[in-house]
Length: 174
Image (cartoon, rainbow, N blue to C red; front, top):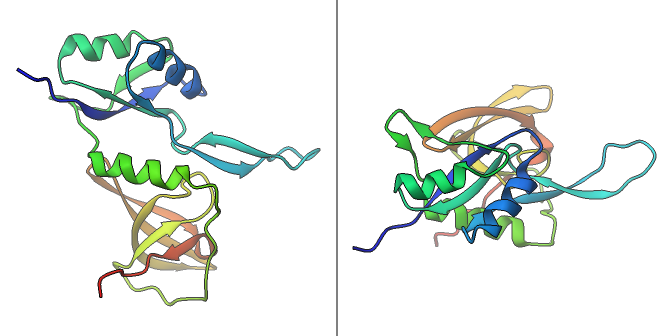
């Protein structure tokens, strides 16, 4: 019987994402640590630094077999695989592929002309800790802020961001 591999979100200790990623890879386990480039907040210099796109998380590819998942959880800095009381919940392959595509580009997204957003419009967040994340426009909050509805591992969350940091994703259907 062939064991099916799935992607899982692995919670790590605070600021241990790179350590856990390196250790998991040393165990010959497929892992993915999406990163984004942002400007350092240090006042004495303006460097572009790479930081995890999802602080506190990496993605690992594993079977649902307890011995395979235990091998991951024995990694220094690993906390738990995200899931429910029934066990870890796989992250859909297409979401991982989309994250890989978004984080592989060296070009920054550039906003175009101002577009009036309607509820349900697909949008992408351009800057900040959630840069590259896709969601649906939910509503205008006022004072240049908007609420974006994000699907995170099967649950929806409302994220408040600056209107300038959101761009409508064009409808590619002809």
